[in-house]
Amino acid sequence: MQTIAERLKTTYARIEQATAQANRPLKSVRLLAVSKTKPVSDIRLAYEAGQRLFGENYIQEGVEKIQALQDCDDIEWHMIGPIQSNKTRVVAAHFDWVQSVDRLKIARRLHEQRPDNLAPLNVCIQLNLDDEASKSGVSAEELPALIDQVSRFKRLRLRGLMAIPKASASSEEQQQTLARLAELFGQYHTKLSNFDTLSVGMSGDLEVAIAHGSHMVRVGTAIFGARNS
Ligand SMILES: *Cc1c(COP(=O)(O)O)cnc(C)c1O
Image (cartoon, rainbow, N blue to C red; front, side):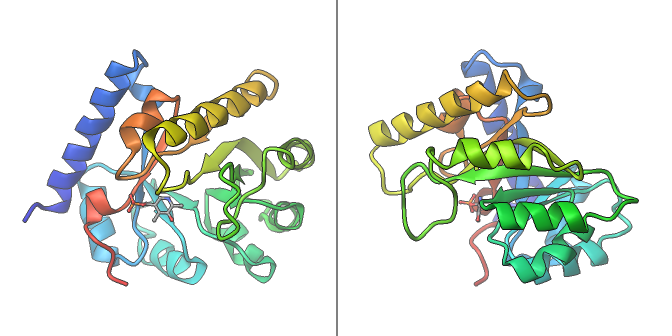
């Protein structure tokens, strides 16, 4: 069985190869290690192997890990799961990024509750281009209004878009969705300063996501193995 350090190395190599193949600069794609359901000891192994960006889906679990890893003070913590409005305060106090903003109420609360001694909270708006009812995220039609509103919140820094394209789609369908996502991202990237992050691509599809302009791939299984629960 491969170690976490070995799997991480393989993942960096995949990113490097896909980035070169797309004629993009290597540093233009960052790796978010998705550690949900995995123990603190696994995160520590990845950290010791050089990984610094970690993503969590569940608020309580994420905050517990952040607190247990306070000695690793250069970790950048990303919230990537759904957020109920009664949980925004703890998210605003502990995370560096929230990629799963999909409504005004959540954004406003994160803005109001971000502690003054911390830098503005980096946020992405989650887009749902497949219109899957089961998944969070705004539609392309809802996006302009939400971007306009979120970009006014001084305690938030609007960094870009996050999406989880449908797993069952054909590769043609998948490419169409990624192309649409890249086009929408491009519209705002040219208009808004700091809007520099298209977060798309996971263990199974990071290559095609990088080919379509992803700046951040979110990888769980390929680094940490199958999820515990
Ligand atoms: C779990 C998760 C990932 C990682 O998925 P893998 O297929 O394990 O790489 C990425 N993004 C989000 C939003 C997730 O919930």
